[in-house]
Image (cartoon, rainbow, N blue to C red; front, side, top):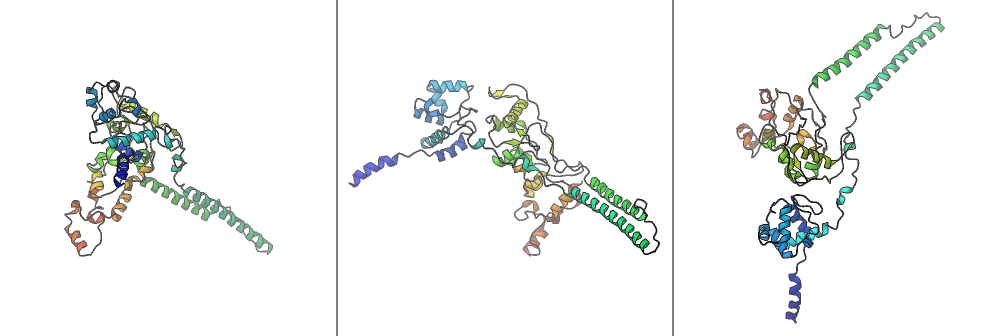
Length: 410
């Protein structure tokens, strides 16, 4: 009986059902850069792929090593090879047949879903409309102050007239009240107030000269950091490779963009809006990129000379100021958001901080450096000893010379 049960169970247990969830993970790691289930990218759309091959074992062989299938003379394989400009498919010999079946199960599930999936949902108003900054109430306070000042002047004038009427009634002669526009005290007070207000705005204008806080220029291509760095989790250093290696973070070259956009021809993410609330066609912006670099998406190759994209620089420092990105990112262990704000939430990037000298100095006075296990600070023996002796519990940038003039001006 035991042998009979085993003979029944073993064949069924040997048949393992394909796992679409596992297949999705394998697909994203190995296939997604060239293939989409519904759309043609670098390779063909994969919906119905099993039905296009005469034998599933041949499909397994094609994924393991496409060259061997081409050499066998299979018509469909050779036709596919010629259709894609004789570009050989990447071989995946490490994938097992079970893993390939998991991928095919995932494709089978996905091809039944409507094209676009959840991307058709209309996002809430947390896009450009939600970008509005908190309103500045200083103008409102100024208007209220002016109204109260006028009311006070009127009340003072009324009080003078009432005093005169009361004096006349009691038979005490009272001189005529002086009109406020002839009253020397009022005139002196008004001049003093105007001098203070004018001085305040003059000083603020001088202090803010050359600063560009909230500066948000229109760029030649609408590029959303929210989509790239936020939703798609692209590391900042993939595009701005210089941030940890040099003084400048660097604007990425067009070939960095094309690493992805040779395959991604259409935008299918959440709706995009400018700061003014105007809807942006993401696919049209990708087409602008293709026009700049001379890429023909239909032919899948460069067909004309490219030209540089004239991005408008947003964060600018005076020529007499030295700032090194790598020192802050590598030695200082600072995140991009420290200076650039919530960059992963910005569709259109704006200057988050005023980048003033006071702003930098205040940061240096309060920011604790990663002092332990950081070779950059190995020369500060006294501070290391003070920490060991528990005289101090941390080290700020100021303590390692971060507020000395020659650090930034030399």
